[in-house]
Amino acid sequence: MFDFVGKHKKLIQIVLFVMFLPFAFFGIDSYFRQEGGGQAVARVGDHAISQDEFSRALRERQDAIQRMVQGQRLDPAMLDNSELRFSVLEGLIQRKLLLDAALRAGMTVSDEQLRSIIVEQQTFRDETGKFDYARYQQYLKSEGRLPAMFEASLRQDLILQQFADGYVGSGFSPRTVVERLAKLSAQQREVSQHVIAPEKFMSKVKLEANAAKQYYDTNVAEFRIPEQVRVEYVTLSIDALMQQIQIEPAELKKAYEGGRRQYEVKETRQASHIFISVDAGAGAEAKQQAQARAGEIHRKLLKAPASFVELAKKHSEDPGSAAKGGDLGTIGRGAMKDVPEFEDALFKLKPGEISAPVASKLGFHIIRLTAIQPAKIKPFEEVRVQVEQDLRKQLAGKRIAELADSFNNVVYEQSESLKPAADLLKTQLRASGWISRTGVATEPLLNNPRLLSAIFSDDVLRNKRNSEVSEVAPGTLVAARLLEHKPESLRPFEEVRAGLEKLLVSRAAARLAVQEGQRLLSELKEGKGAQPAWSTPQLASRSDLKGLPEPVVRQAFRADASRLPAYAGLENPQGGYVLVRVSRVNDPGNLPPQRAAEIADGLRQVQGQEAMAALMAELRQKAGVKINKELVEKKQ
Image (cartoon, rainbow, N blue to C red; front, side, top):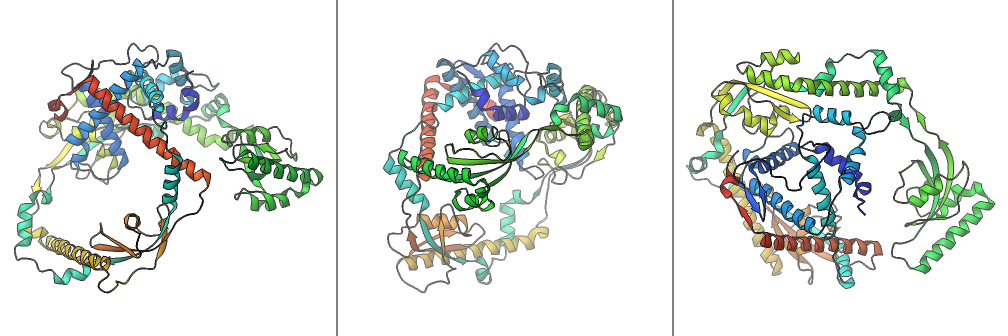
């Protein structure tokens, strides 16, 4: 039975809130809807990937990259290059192949199952907790979304998840391999390092008289000042509209009364426990011994309940609570979902009552309920600010939906000025600093790839028209107009000469440091030469670096430690060379079963991924993928 809804509510919430395409609520007529006309970018068997579908996926990837580096300058090559374009297309191809295979295997998601996911989302529920179709529609409008086939995309995601789950985590690894890997992962090595810095070689570098000029002439692109513009722009955003909205006290009170449920504080319970642990891989005898210990402690508590704190400090194996007499603080419903037996027992107790030993996957718990904080509705004055904020956002959402079309029309129809658009929104025009095609760090709002593309279009630069309206963030629309334009230029040699000469000297010194490091490493391995001034040895592991740089520790574990001391070396990313010495190796004793289980699980994941990769290769070969490289590389 399809139970993805119950297990993955959080995933679906994330999908809904980051979606690029809204959806029509009822009716999906195809899993492979063809979008847009024209020549296909690729064909996957009987299915085509249209130019529209590819362009939208590319924009989504570009937006994701931009969000990752919000406020930073980006090289245009990162946002639109052949590598990125073919990576996006490869993702679409793999999706088509896997979806086709899943459907052929009979995997489906019914309309009812899909609808149940949508109606469960809290965002679309009214004050009574029921799904509100009008609120759902309003939310889409407030996000500036156009109706599209999101249901089909969501349905595909669920089917693909089911299909992938059959491969990932399905592998098997022999016990001896798991144990060997577990021991290697826990091995420790005593590591010290010696850094050979470039600075000590700076005085030995003598540049040729014309070295800087030769470098300048050979690498002209490094000294180009990119094309830049200054623009004026106008913004329509929910945040700005929220500030304009005036709310009467009576409206606030009405909103509070209508949504009292969302201001409810659920019941919580003050609890303590005495915990006797049982390893996940323990046998029946170990479990019986732990249960017997818990039973003995419980019998003592029956005779002397006041000794709970003392017994918890003495016997409890929960390091987080034992020192506090077993105190766990306040616990609400769902807080202990990983050990539901504990939660069920706790919420059946009365204040002051102590439970019999409760078995869970972790061991045995003796629980004491100290106090109950009953559920309550927060009073109006306590949540007044939140109520006002929520109401402002709701009203602003309605207002932005009403203004979006008018804003777009005014910007387009009165393209010789942005003032009419600013008047419509009751806001002021803002002027930017200098912007290149990669954006400007001081004005993150203008760093959106689509807006930058519009600003540097012929319509804006040559025809002096308003840019098209671009959505730069959910609920935020921007239009811009050119103020000043600087074409691309080249920084004069004399301006960069001093800095360039310093750079060339640093690079040459770094090369000399590397050569010196490699020479010393060779001597150390042969047992020749003097020992460098090593740093204080640190006993590091792959998971605990002991303050050493990660590349140094990685190199130490690559060194052949069959003969000690062992030596290795690596070029320092900051320049120069680092010598590495391994003087001692500590192999672990018996590892806890939990660690072996983690290693086995990791291996299963890797094997499952390999199985999925093999399946992809097979599906690709059978389907016959054809790519129109010219359309992929063509800028839309």
